[in-house]
Image (cartoon, rainbow, N blue to C red; front, side, top):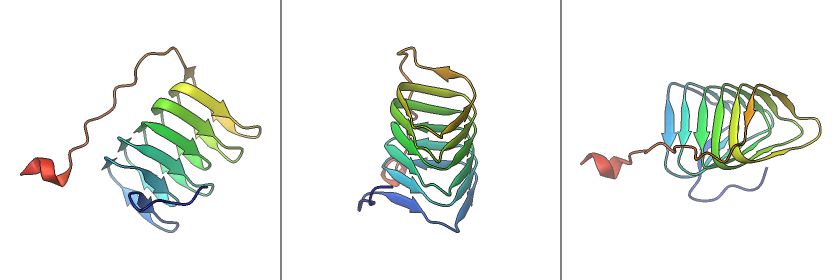
Length: 124
């Protein structure tokens, strides 16, 4: 995985998040997430990560395990260590040799509706 940036939310290895997770910025998941994941920015999933959730993101690079449907408005890259169990919707899809995909893949150019993720500033 590439180095993280200052504006990135990180769920570190050894951390488990349960429930819906929403973010306006980029997110790096190295731990576990169970629940729905909505990322208005880019998502990176580490090689040892486990996500048991439906995922929506702008772009995504997946190296770990995702059990749930994933919708990416732009580019989805599945690394050789990726294990994808669920349906995939993406504008551009890259799958490295060794990646596992069990599900329906849709790349018909339809726009993926990105969620509106409210910031704490919006709730005033």
